[in-house]
Image 1 (spheres, rainbow, N blue to C red):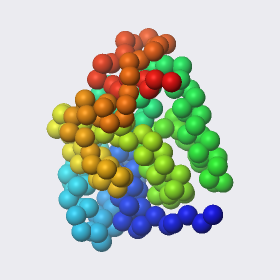
Image 2 (tube, helix red, strand yellow; image 1 turned 30 degrees about the vertical axis):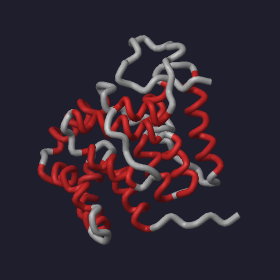
Image 3 (cartoon, one colour; image 1 turned 90 degrees about the vertical axis):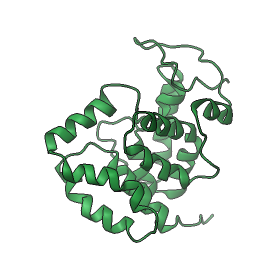
Image 4 (cartoon, one colour; image 1 turned 180 degrees about the vertical axis):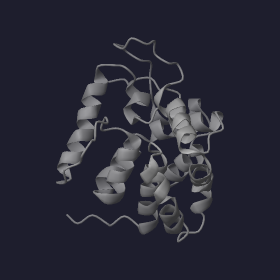
Length: 211
């Protein structure tokens, strides 16, 4: 069955978001003019990305990388792994990661994880933009609650990346919830059932979905 092609605007938003949410190495900074040019073709998209693009261009490389590590790697307040928000450190998460891998395999394209977990948001976004738009959007819709929780966390901490998450969510059906409680009600989540990690379960995270 032929699937409808993804519209060009969403494709550009997903790829630009994948890059802007990735570790800010030299290659990423060099891509900033390309990202600006691509987004400028679609009215209303560039302003959502401009604060992060400005940051990439105006900040010294070492400082930029230190900021990224502090905000996205060292803590869990802005976790970029989608299943962390829904499954935390539970045994179920292994099954979820296998689900992402299966989606990549079914695309017929070899997806290089490059040492990352398969639910890493920049990877999912790039997969959606460049490999299989239908399968990728299904992953994003399935983990819409994770996207919204991340968006709210970034917004709460006044990080410019929140507007990029808003741009991603705007490509998906339905309006974005206003707060974490609304996300939980929308997604129909219940209390967590088990935790096998060393750290206590973070109450800000979405609990595990009931079976």
